[in-house]
Length: 370
Image 1: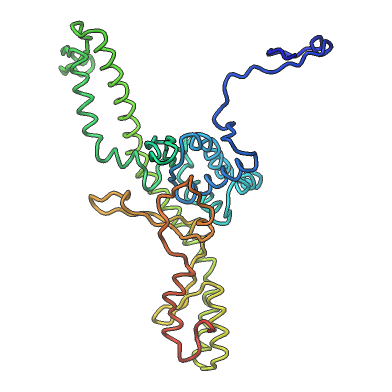
Image 2: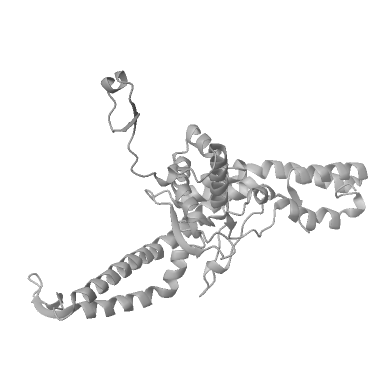
């Protein structure tokens, strides 16, 4: 026999009654999504990895609401910066040497002054009729380089202001009250809005709902127009500082490699040249056309420094994207996550396609061994 109750006491236990708690609904982050616990955890890690890497993904509405709380926690852990918090973030992500580096780098710099609300969900229609017609949503980080709200605000904020003024003129009558400043004595005017009593109640409620929706949308767009440029400035400053620190850290090694390269070129020993060429490639050192050695950043260093999207005059970065290609990411992409972009080129691919050593010093045996 089962009795639904909100309290447990010893008397009911003595009677042998089995009590069950009342259930008033399940929170989104506690949904089961018709999956086993292991499958749910793998799904959540996959979604979070794709979101951190691409900063905008498309999935179903249920999964978007399921992952939103965990995505906000990732940013909080990254901002905390202690070892325990970083271990928690690492356990929630695949490819941690890339994703955790990006969390600690540009994302932490972007949200350093933000108290919460790091992610945003946009409804995005339904799946095709041939599928299950599940409602879709876009999950994105707020103030990312291709922020949807910022892109819409640049195009439509003036139109929304005009529509809001039209609604106010239909809802309210404007009464201009002349006033005089008590301090300076200068004349002025104050506009007082009065309700129009000749409107039917149903129409007035409809217009009031439209006005409230437009006001919320306008406030969100104005906040985005204010915070988006500031986020780009913070990310650019972080990228510059991280790049300078990396170059200063690599400078002693680069000088040593430059000296060894000069010695190898002067000696002309083919075996020494080939061994040294392989050491250069393993250390991600590249040589320009003038024979100067520099070190290319690793994928983790690029993720930490971040990639700043620069837009020209009259140009919006929604049309541009630059990401570091990660081969491991492609194996994690499922049909439930559609990354917005997968272009870009890894450092290894760039070295293979444009190896300066093979073109410039091929006669000395530089280059990869066939």
